[in-house]
Image (cartoon, rainbow, N blue to C red; front, side):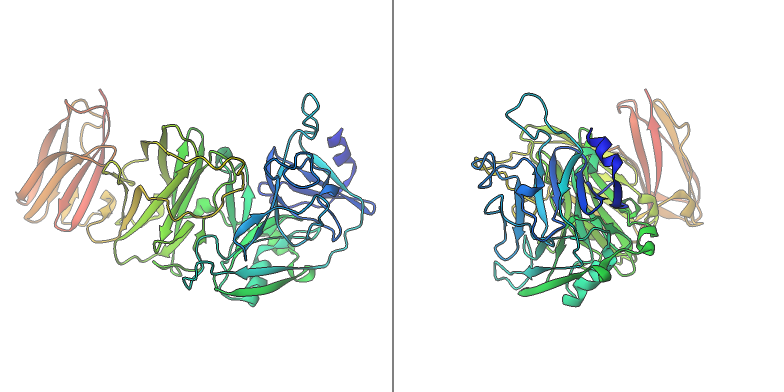
Length: 508
């Protein structure tokens, strides 16, 4: 019946990014219907009218005076940057500030005391009043709570919203934010509960994106002491056809995507390389907001020992080895298996070496020659205080990095066989696949000291076949892998400062 109702009214504006927004706004005569799609969980929304109260939404609420269960955990929060904490409304009769962002937990069952599920999704919220908002305003602050002279941790984050009945342009929002203060991150963060195969992630949007009507989103200022008002003018922010037609930024296009999964769910940390990038913080870096779902994975890198990043933009011409601490959190207390995978390494210069080090086990994994790494980890999470269900989105200085991502562009970096210099030819081993022996051969154009070694799937050296000076000409050596398990192996040939590799497959 609800679907028939939505079909009977015409959409006023529907967000083009329906994979991000779970809000649809429909017009019927002088009233509006707001439809919430998806499933039970946190939604980031706001009000389309000045005098709308939380009770006017008609949603099941709890943890707020006037709700059915006022002593339970709260289903509505908004963020107070000056206090550095989430707050709850004083009453269900409190008015909703149209430009203020809210996180509202929407239950599938509207009537808990009745048998069965009452309501379900989508939910239709009737707004019996005209929406004539053309202007709104919201306070923006960046408070240095710990007086260390910089914005870090949960400081500088502001939860605001699109209060209009049409899409607004992310590029125009950022432009207006920069007019208030240039030191603002050029991104907005929106909640996508089904991202990461249900893990839930805050998706990073940049120029070329649009924000749905009534969509709440996060922005972050980095100037300590900032206290300003953002005058939201509909005529200055409304998305035009160009905004809707431009390709959206997509994190899958980054040069290196590191994914951590547990069962089917995953989170990712992304690196991109640009001539505008730098080793230190730069405008292309995007901070990490943690998932709002219980038992979710959170994967992120750090820079400068303080800032946690979901996206790190680095220079495309690295001139020195760099190491990036990799962190993760998981709320599951039981010991479980986690798996790293990675994508898009083919976009990196062939001479760059990329390694992942597991500091707990001492294992080094060469990302070019492997496609995954699994490990066991006991999260040993301390339980939250009773009744404390406040979303925890921000970085925690106590998180220890178990992993280290190393990118080495030096002359000793790996090269493919196609890019080998004329002075040496590293031939494919034969047979390949093999059982249990294979012949590895190479040709030298000049006398040189060479090292030939074999490495396993997780980056451990299993054999050194040659470590001596060899003369000009062809050289062959047979490797007997009778005592090795089936799997992938890497033959590594080192001559001076150059290293060459070949993949080999042992099948028993």
